Image (cartoon, one colour):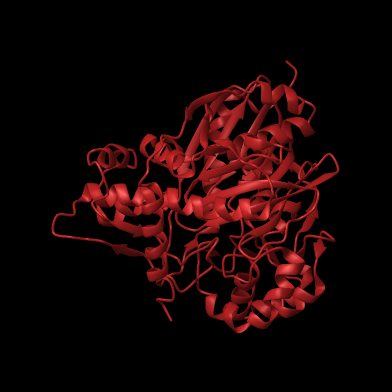
Length: 493
């Protein structure tokens, strides 16, 4: 049998997933496993990088056991971005837990560097913010005993999660990333598409610890049995791409008149800006991908708390037993009862960029119930999405009539209809909502010659379209939301 199966590894913030696709785009097998979240201090978020690796092996081996490694033509990797791992290149052991993209421990350091903010924005397209990798790298090298000297001596390696997993899958042979992930580090020049020496000096990051930067559809190396993967022959890794860029490619491709939102742990609203980056003081300009020697840029608004707010209602407050229950609970009341939730649990990302903001619940009365809180929480995801889309529309002179959605919370029918009504835009949800995995698989399959872009797109279908219903009170609701956001700002100062 000719090898024709493509596997995507979707390395997320709360868990890892492996999905096998047939040459016709059908899902043949899938396996998912969560991993632990660590919160050592308020505002700090960490992962155990070794647990992420073990979880990756578990889900990949589970899928390979079902489809047969001998039938796999290629593998694509998509990953949570910005999350920072530094490890000893000889022992393979991380020097510290991974610092997650949500972590705010370096917010003070970013404020201290504010004089460099304009230079950083010009070179990288990014805001000077603890969200990105640079100050996380600096913190690790400063706070782990002997790390700075070891890095300068060439004994340590840095990577985002794609690089860490690729290094392990190839049994320590490949230390690389792609342009989409490199562009999220805050030390990568998105114009020259190279590591920037001036920024490396600013953050005191030795160049020797950085991975090689490849095109998104490059051959990154081979998965080998020595790494503990159930295969008797090498499996080529033919794509690496950040998760939101992967979702954008799956949903919108090269089109510049469409917007996508991934309702994941955070909310990630993105539009393809074409061959040149778009400059804006409210959103991030980033590299979308480099495919077939064509580089595409994207405009992105990253909202730090999205689906994780629903997890918070479930795990910390205990007002729901499952994420799905939030939908029925929200529909059990006719309004939010005046309650507004601003989910700034780790500060506010786009388009506000206020690391000092904190989560706020306003409008509580004696009659407020958990249903009102659940409804207001879901509404906050829609409001945050509109904040970003309004900023995209201001930056790109293009008429956008449709929002393409994916991610776990896109399954929530209350949220999707409320989103359509608020934006007065059609909301389109694909039949396959794992768009990040699909994007990585599409690119890997194209790179391996299994399918053309047109052929694989033709296999994808829509599940649901939500059309807006006019509500004359919607703008008043949105104005109240904006008032609430202002009250949440500048809190932790």
